[in-house]
Length: 215
Image 1 (cartoon, rainbow, N blue to C red):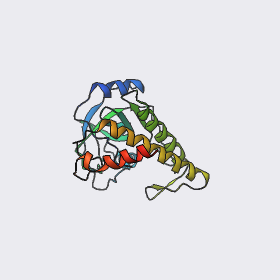
Image 2 (image 1 turned 90 degrees about the horizontal axis):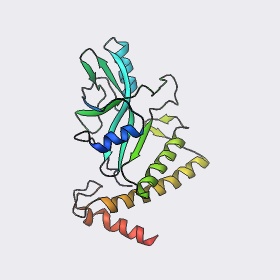
Image 3 (image 1 turned 30 degrees about the horizontal axis):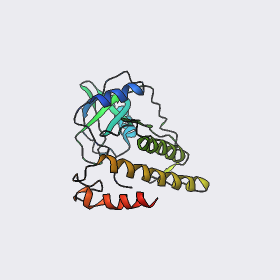
Image 4 (image 1 turned 45 degrees about the vertical axis):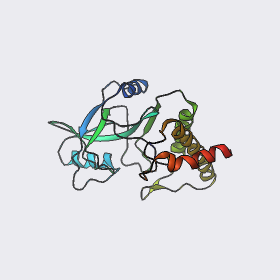
């Protein structure tokens, strides 16, 4: 499957505000500077923050990191930042080198750092009523539920047995939904979703059309 077009938004748009309301958030999202700690690890935000808090540098604030797939969905990923005397700061390095994170607090999120099966949650809210978006979100939630039953190993999930076959089936369904969304929303002359630098119409689009027509 090509790259999911979620990205850090440049502003808090009405679709982001509506998505926050839909998942029951009382706080308002805000942009927070990322100032990575030298010892902080990517994708380990809660542990990075707890280590800083135990060193007396502040306290943990949990909530959601917000990314958007424009006109498709708003993605909420559980995230932790450090609350200091001067405000909130994200001390976890961003894997894509972003300098800020769009964050909204949510005290309902619980995480037990002593539980090896514990995960920070994620949510996705559709920005449209199209069935392909609903299918994409539905299959992603089902895939997440399967992976939650398996402890991560070196950042990956080793799913075995009947669950592995179910996961493969869901991945195929998600690829189909992603393809249909891309064909509907990505302009012919827009940069291709695979980040090749070529126009979509001369890169992944022909193959996607062929695959869809062959079904």
